[in-house]
Image (cartoon, rainbow, N blue to C red):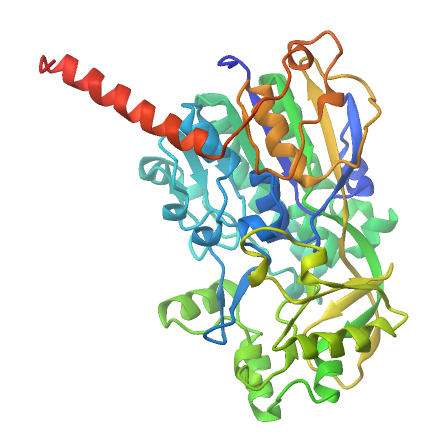
Amino acid sequence: MDNNIKVAIIGLDGANANTARLIGLKNFEIETTLMSTIPPYTPPSWTSILTGVNPGKHGIIGWQKFNRDENTINLTTSRDVKFPRLTELLDRASYKTILINFPMTYPFSGIQNKNNSIIVSDWAAPTQTIYPRELHRKYEDYLVEPPHQWSKWEGNKKDYAKIVYEYTRTRLQIYYDLLEKEEWDLYSIVFSETDWFSHLYPQILEKKEKNIVTPTFQLINKFIEQAKEIADVVFIVSDHGFEIKKKVVHVNEILKRRGLIKYSRLKSTLVNLARKLPKPLVNKIVTSLNLQSSGMAYETNLTENKAFMIEPTVWGVYCKTKKDAEIVQMIFSNMPEIKKVLHSYEVFHGPYSKDMPDIILIPNKGVTFSQLFAREPIDNVYKGDHHPEGILYISGKDIAETPEFKKVVTVFDIAPTILHIFGLPIPDDMDGRVLTEIFEKDSEFTRRKPKYVDPSYYEKKRQDEKLKKAIKNLKLKGII
């Protein structure tokens, strides 16, 4: 166990190699591609980075979840994460952690082990807050609302860049304080600005009009450089990459035309009006009134639908029966826009695979999906959207320069690698591996072989720590 080392994970949501260059990342020993989850989507991928497992084990596939038994669609929260996060494992081993802006960490009650943790809620949380409460009170003035509604700024793109800059500048006062003044072993943060900009300004993916995003990216780069000064090892990671999309496939429109969706035009019109409301407001209304979170639940009849898509970036279609799944597979297998059509069991494994979509559509290059009903099944577009190839940059103590990797590096590999750096064993049900190639040959990290243990190891460790504290308190009180 190494109690002295400091590790930082700095997440750049949606960053690809071009984004990394725009930010100005330099002087890293390692620069490589980090393969995302299927689908390459914020909720499952960041959760996989923190847990080291695929969605079939941690249970997160999108911002929404479909309950097959009740035919309902609801928002996903921290309580739906079914596998221990890296920070929870470290907490059980008495390490101090800081977790900032990670999806699926709100409400904080959904994180079981946080006695040694500081947590800042992410942009999707219905309220911006910090755990523990005393830190919320300290930084309340800097908890400005994230301007994540990039699509609302299509007609005023220049002003959006200025608003994001001010948001980042203000929030950085929290980030720097926690980095420089708090005690921590693992400092982890996600900057979503890279994703928002890549959606609204797809031209930056082609190295055009870079000046729009430069001021904000300079702020982020300055923070990264400071983190490199403080941390012993720094990981720069993205949950997925980005690419230019030139075609959009309206999946539900196609399913509707094939008679697989029961659709109401009037209800769909009302739902489209609701979609124009600010997302935080919609989330608060949905939560407070216990409503279903997807327009699909209102513009169609979920009990009668035979197949449907909820979130386009999930790439998934839920089917009522195996026969319906076969029909969906046949429909999309014949489309030139689709690279592959996979069954759920070909993508996910684990106890929560049953909750995943039945069919996964893998788009061809330059193709994206929409769940909205449209006049035409396929439209031409010009937009930025997700791609499986993200980035991984590593710098620091005992990190080898430009190593050759034995296998493709994936988001599942981050958590086990960091556990190994801390000298902790890896639960043997993690899907990822320790990236032993990143360490210098004569380093302690290389000499110390990865150790794998039963998943119950960390729970037992937590119970042992509680017992030790209880005995110590009893001794202090003179009871024993």
